[in-house]
Image (cartoon, rainbow, N blue to C red; front, side, top):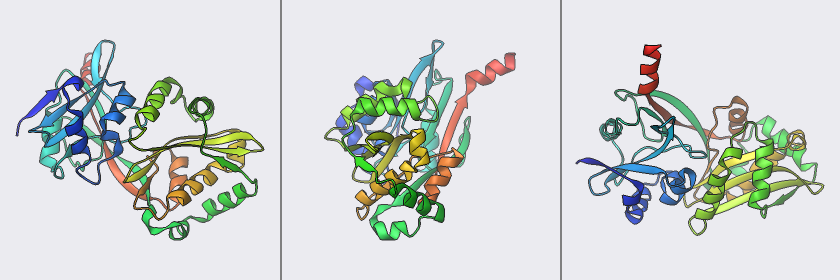
Length: 300
């Protein structure tokens, strides 16, 4: 079947979203409402056949050069299909990315061993099966996690689910370990707006003596609870508020046929925290083609 390129304006949302829901392992990131929010609708797509398979291509320009990038709080993209994607189909799609995109940097949920013209780096995601219930989940918490939760509970925290979006963004931008959210606030605002009637959005805050000390943003659909953003103030870190917040969210969803998805991370301290909750490791691939950068280095 032929693979053709479509601009965002030409994509049929109904057929695209139907394809995105046709396989149980397709992440929420593939829905048009999610892609539109995190790219300001600046994405195109490769489509095989009559929406039999599809691949979103988030695009932007830097120094007048168009390139493919991984959007903010969008851990994995790749190729979706009415049937599971073979490695042959994955290779066909990547080979069909227009050459005008000299730089391609995408995290891909599909299984990939080799791609001609691309480099592949394996990355980790961390998940918990919520179906087995809270008691069973909590048995897998390690000693350090249990100690941190006990310490947190000594502070008699108040957990609220009515944190205003602007309050959350201001807190997140101030306390997160890295300047990621501040330049991407509009994307987060649009995502929470687009998710209405599409998924369950939770903006949670931990308070100590009426002071906000930790926050988390979660989006849940029928398959997963995605832990998209979080941060703690210095007081929150000292009082282990994030351990309390994660544990409470897990309790809220425990027993449901969903996966708790930590959405990463490659940061060692966060990886250790996630694994301390008994998370299992999932692998995905970071795929890159840096034709322009390679040619530039060759000329220097």
